[in-house]
Image 1 (tube, rainbow, N blue to C red):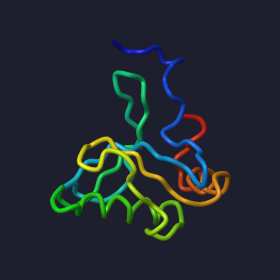
Image 2: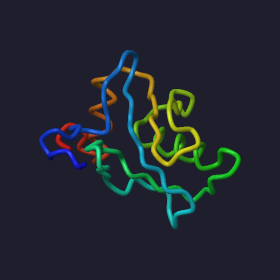
Image 3: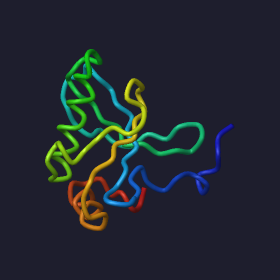
Length: 116
């Protein structure tokens, strides 16, 4: 059953202790590595749609995801970790740092995390 739009989670990015968490829908083996938009599942959960050129083998797609998100948010790759969904398309990535600064950086990158 689909939840009404007003009940949907407002953003795929949420502040947490020591940083932010980003819900991601990953597409491996894409033509280019990039953030492609937003996805909304049947439960009303929003996710950042990310495509990477790496295959989903031996952790290559996950590593490419972390590298891309690190570049987008201006953090070293060591500040990012996949905390949920390691072997699934939907993942939760933790980004360590100051939550307000990370939210601003993601918005500056064009993700408009607060209004989605």
